[in-house]
Structure formats: C-alpha cells, structure tokens
Image (cartoon, rainbow, N blue to C red; front, side, top):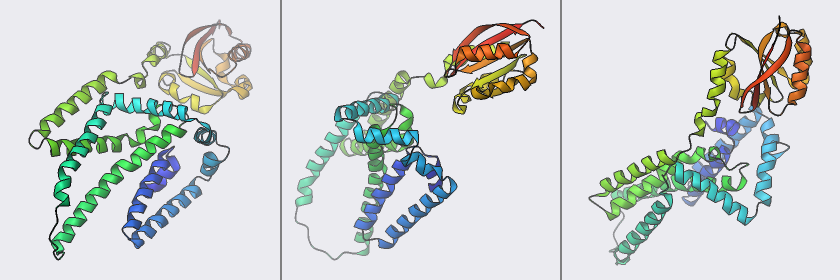
Length: 338
C-alpha cells in the first residue's frame, strides 16, 4: 500500500509524509525506540522500492517534471495574499460540497464547546488528589486515554497539514487535489461534532447530530456542481450513435487528450489514430479511400493544416462540416463522392 501511494499519488505522498511524521513524533515522545526505528526503516524501504519500480518519479517531482516545477514555484514565489486566496478557494470546496456551507459554524461551535467544557472541567481537575499507588487498572486506563488522544491527533492533524500544504503548492485550484483527505477530514470533523454535542447535550445529542447531518446532506446536494457528470459531452455521444456506421480518424498531438473521447469514438465502425506529426501515414491507410468518415482533431493541433492534409490524402473527399466540439476535440464529418 505504501509503495502504491509513493508511485501513483500526486500529492498523496505529502499526506503520507505528515501521517508518518506525526506518528513518529508520538513514538519518540513515548520513548518507543524500536517502533520508531521500524517506522523509519519501513518508509525508507517503501520509498526505495518505489524509485526502483518507477525511476522517473524523482525527476518528475524534483527535476524537470512540469508539475513538480509548478508546485515548487508556487511554494517559493506565491505571496501571502495569493496563499490566503487559494486557501479560501479550497476551503470553499470543502465547505460547500461536503458540509453544506456549515463548516464555519461547525468550527466555531466546536471551538466554543471545547472551551466551555475545558473551563467547566478545570476546577475539578485542580482539586488536590490523594496520592495512591498506581494499580494495573489505573495504568490500563491511562493507556486507553492516551490511545484515544493519539488516534484523534492522527485523524485530524495530518489531514489539516496536507490541506494547508496543497493549498499552497497545488497547480490548479480544483477539488481533486484535496479529495485524498476528504474522508479523514469528514471523519475527524463529524467525530469532533459528535464528541462536543455529547458532552454538552448529554441526552439529546443524537437528535442534534442527526439534524445537523441532515442539513449538511441536503445543502451539499443543492450546492454541489454536477460538472463531473460531463453532460456537455451528450451531443457528441448522440452524434456518434447517429453515425455509428462510419469509420473515424482521430488526429491528436498528446495522448492524454484522447481519453475523454473514448465513449463516443467507441460507437463508430472503426477508429484509426494518427499523431499530428505522423499524419503522412494516412497515405498508407485503407481509410483514405472512404467517401465519408468522421474526423476528430484535438484543439491544440493546427486544425486548418490537418483538414487540408486529410482532404488532400483522401481522393474521394471534397468537403467537410463541423459537427461539434467538447473536451479537447473538434469533430468534423468529411464527405464526397465515391
């Protein structure tokens, strides 16, 4: 699992670092030397194996890799004002999409609840206690309390540090960079709400918690953007079904731009991919003899040059019409006489 996170995670490695850092500090503070050494050895081994599996990861993160360079530039050069603006943007995703716009109120109420509970409990904690010999039961209770505290710390602190770090270095202000810690942040914040309401409203805390979760869920549903459903792709998908009997030629300049079109191009009779710089290979392809076919061109290609080249290579084609565009492509129907 650690190796998978090292190799595949974009900013996931940052969360893994903070998680291990916080846990390592706890082990050192508790003088658990063997466990601390074991943690270090495990992480070094996982990192080493990850580099062996995918050596370019070092260059990608710290060398000439585009995302690595952009992240380091944001870390070094972004101003305080820019950082605050980015932090507000990422906070807005979490607040609106997960907590239904209630996160600020939840944070304030939880903070007040913790302060009230601490002040209420403080006089009792300052009362002189009789010295007694530490029994096995007392030691066990102390271990349980310590375990509960460290679990809360591990749940909340690494996620918050990750959230702040990614807000600083992320290339784009988009929710996908924060999604790796959504689960732990939700668990930590809701768990804290449950703990505080249980302490303050001993008997009716369940009712309050259910009402809060209901409002959060309804508001999140109403506030959530539904762009991930890719509804804008529907016209091209319908168009591909209409022209399913035709062959398709797909001209691209970068492979990663092709993926969003997989659903609609799969509807055609066949699909032939050409990289823009290798478009001359079309002269050796059977599809050049078609009198009618669909042509996809990624938006960063020279569209007019590609169209002219394809028409010149296909003797049966005399004209074209644009059918639509979506994602990274423009789509054309080329036609002529047999």
